[in-house]
Length: 368
Image (cartoon, rainbow, N blue to C red; front, side, top):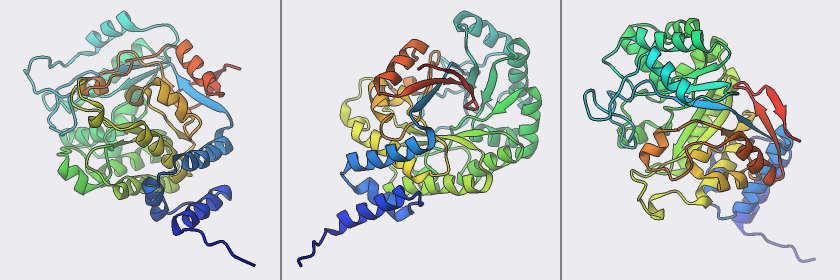
């Protein structure tokens, strides 16, 4: 009887499919293989299988508002178009009262979360960042404060002389309830040197999240892909997050962020392809087997691709936002926000069930 000999690549894919089907963890080597494969549909189907197993057909979103207290920053990261120097045209540092005035002009009923990030401004003390949260929590006690990146926490530690734990405890007293995921970029010191990431290094980023998890904070985490990093570095990034999640179980969601060019006028060759964006979301779902959610960030990949990603491993369509600035300052061409009705339409269009959530993925309303 003649036996069929499969090409090595086909055998590898079949082995990965078998592992995924049985809920077994895929290795770093297998993750790199998936990135190098051109079989996007099979990768997407595997990711969809994992997501359906974890979340069924529910896709989550939140009514959120992004806030930026300051764009003054001591760092000069190569990919950032948001930062300014002190005194530079367009630079600003808002007080709590000024931020509340801005919020009152733009907030709409139903906002459940303030997403707060900004520059590493060395011209104000750590107390400024504490007081900023305190002012918001006093004015909007029922809105969750998801504030600051791990890199900002490391910066606060340096300017205050406090440990990560002490910084977090002071911020928690002021109203901090979760950390944002930014500042991860690519968790490779070689990459960070090339891209002049002048902020928390790999071990510091992970140490901040570990400290937050030990204090009971559930946090978010990101990966900024599409510049000089290798596939191996992307997979190593995911593997390091997976290892910390094994230890603490404190991450709620992984958010792949597609690198934006420096100008809205940049052509398609300066942007990640839809193929690369979908593959990264799907591989994130397959590698991060101990994460409940993978987010499709429509700000970077657009609403239509976000809709497709919901069948390729993503279970979170982010949220409404109000005037996102960081990606758009870099050259994003997508909407700066979507309405609740838009998100419900987008999710239903993918054959999924929209679920409005709070910061911690507690269900607020299911749109059957």
